[in-house]
Image (spheres, rainbow, N blue to C red):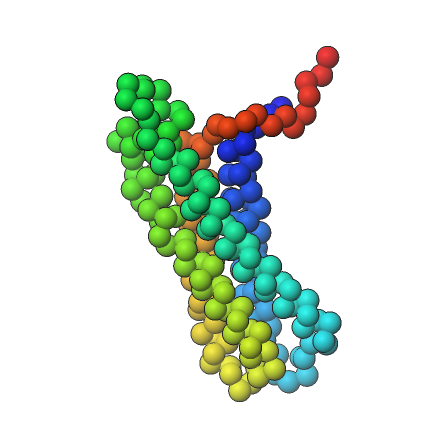
Length: 189
């Protein structure tokens, strides 16, 4: 059983960074719901606050890890231009998608979403994390601010979720492969 180096980077980009980021975004929505529904007496201990801050920072790092690894590792491999005369476009995912009118939409809509809109997810969640850490003690006084943070967190979850869905479907149609082979399990005799 083996995968290529590019397969591994794609897995880290999509499943590790992207998948965990989306789960963390949902967790932030739960935190925001809790902070809006509890009136007084729902304060966290100092250890609980530290864990919440660590969670928020890790979420932001995962989000930025997803978009940066996609933009600077996976995307250049996706956009690789085949040399003149190449007819097998399997190693050139963008060209493979655009070569068939039935799959061209995966690039024109799906990849354009991933290239542009997906960046909004970590930007929005960085703002939400900052608001939650900055105004953690002022739940009642800043209720409207927290309600606005819910809207931004939902927008981030939507942008990231759609990007993840497009990424999975695009990778199914035209996977980014290549690089050195990595053996995950040796064959049995």
